[in-house]
Image (cartoon, rainbow, N blue to C red; front, side):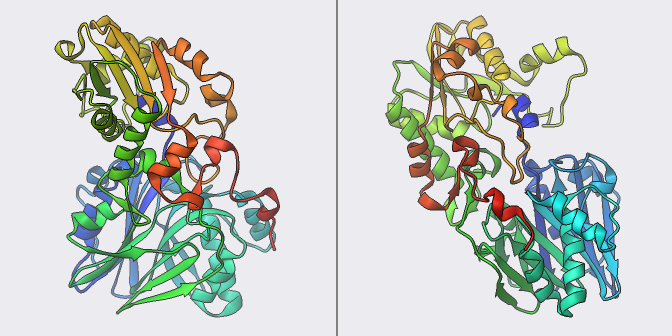
Amino acid sequence: MTEENAKDIKEKCAVFGIRSSEEVFDSIYYGLYSMQHRGQESAGMATFSEGKINLHRDLGLVQDVFRNVRLPGRTGVGHVRYSTCGGSVLENSQPLQINYSLGSFAIAHNGNLVNAKEVRENLERKGSIFTTTTDTEIIAQLIVREHLKTGDYIEGIKSAMNELRGSYSLAILRDEQVIAVRDPWGFRPLVLGKSDKAQAVASETCALDALGMKVIRDVKPGEIAVIGDSIEYFQARKEQPAYCMFEYVYFARPDSILNEVSVYEVRRNLGRILAMESPVDADIVVAVPDSGTTAAIGFSQESKIPYGEGLMKNRYLGRTFIMPRQKDRENGVKIKLNPIKSEIEGKKVVLVDDSIVRGTTIRRIIALLRENGAAEVHVRISCPPIRCPCYYGIDMQTYEEFIAQTKSVKAIGKEIGADSLAYISLEGLVNAIGLDEKLCLACLNGEYPIKEGQTKLI
């Protein structure tokens, strides 16, 4: 996915939690740093020491937020964020700290509730007061209410899960415990790891790898894992698993393993299947870096067309790079991506990317390739056309933003200026991931795992 599209389609965030026999600040820092791709608007950390929670959060990247900060403690949670619900303001950054009569806790959340308005209004009628506009505070306030009602914190979480609808992977710091919670559908990833001195939970295995930790297993859909001296597991309500397919196509780092499936292998398989389904006579396979790279390698391996670095990415801009003027934005792709003329001049190019949203950026890239001598540009996309909104934690929530909602593949190809355009089939996508009936494909086919009737409070 191009940088412009990366601003249009954004993962909500990443969570991390750890309990250790040593200080955990560095571990949380590097765990979050390794998942910076999942959120670049804000970062935060909460640790527990001397009977209290230490909290620091701010807008910005991990290295900026914690430049001159160090929190004590051997237990803690952390968070990096993009906003899909709630504005990009400090008050909505995480973790959130909640204080009430039975104690306090800090909570970090990845996901999006589909019945947030109803739950919030219900809580407000019963006296809850909110200080943010996030789904995270709704979850926290509901846990507080149910804890007060049941007298047991874990039972309170279970009861809260009976009212929550949507995606939520949580890392909660309560005293010297980290509590990991995954929604009953398992939309967002959550995985447990361990070392000789620590046990942890993270949104992706790449964070555990960065700390030299061994993966234990994924937190199961509807499961609560309490990390103390050991890990205790509690099963709450369960639904048919609905793992987000876009985690595999784009969001997760390719070196991560989600739900026991290698992201790198999935993306390479996507490219191979795409080459089998939509072959083309060409001289070189070029990826739109970075998210199209692995699929392009797979396409090259299957088609026997050589892979080449036809586009060089400026790696110092970052996803938050935004040009202020429309004219600058129109030309922005030239700053972000620069063709290597010697690789593409006079050649028939297969351009591989993971998705097309509005089509504006891919059109500019194709024009740029032609300006630098490409004889033909054939576009191959490793995800079927995105036609429907996502309500489970990805920032694409209106039908109008998808070019595939109103145009045929042929019409899209003409609009973006490609000599040919082909997407992988839905069947090909499912086969590449290999999880069959356990995927959420709602943004592709409009079949939402959570039906409208399920959003009502019990």
